[in-house]
Length: 277
Ligand SMILES: O=C(O)CCC(=O)C(=O)O
Image (cartoon, rainbow, N blue to C red; front, side, top):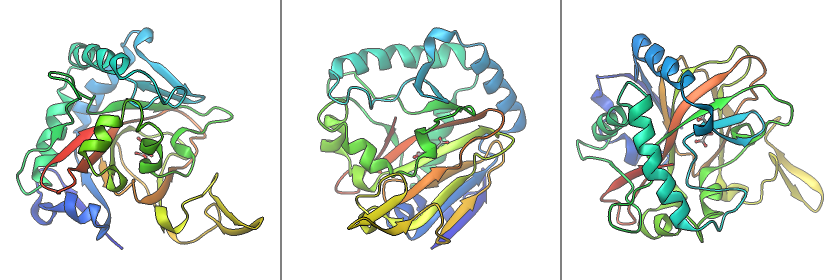
């Protein structure tokens, strides 16, 4: 599987990349200079000034702002709770982060979708909307799981399809969703993204990176060589078929890693693209 590296704003070969990624014709797309060095400084300064109450500690070593729609602790959470919080979160994002990060994603996704706008996914009722993206802060902590756990995004989405993601599952082809994130700050050891050459359906019952048949390990993703590990620089954006390909963030062992990302998918007919978290 190929990958493509481009520099914003030169989108040349990448004009229909969202569809190529969905078809797994591409393993990943890396967009360098998604944010410039000065923009990164502003974003991180503003993030650090955010009141503590706005952060959600999702799992040990993994803190997010704002929270995603999926609620792993309570997958059947009342949708009203999330959409009320999302309204507030949108206001806070604009109030606290001095750079319009959503506008940047809108701009770049449009370039990667043959000049057709990619919208933030609307919610089930008039005026309600999913959050487009969130900040993810990973710190070295014993027991860290979060995205360091080998996973694919569509399995996670599927866990909430009776709750906050019910509407999403009606509207978008989430099984083929893409994952995307911009690395804002790298950690000192660990933190690279590993994408395996295995699809969800190759190992549908993968548990903790291991696929067992009759008690024997058929595949152990910890040791396989069929993978690539992508080292990113701060300011790089990566987009990859995270709903289809097993992947992980290597365990953060030293210092803090900060990323900003979400998920994207097309409508079932493939004509419209949306993104959300
Ligand atoms: O934001 C990150 O750093 C990791 C994202 C990820 O693992 C995912 O989208 O599935």
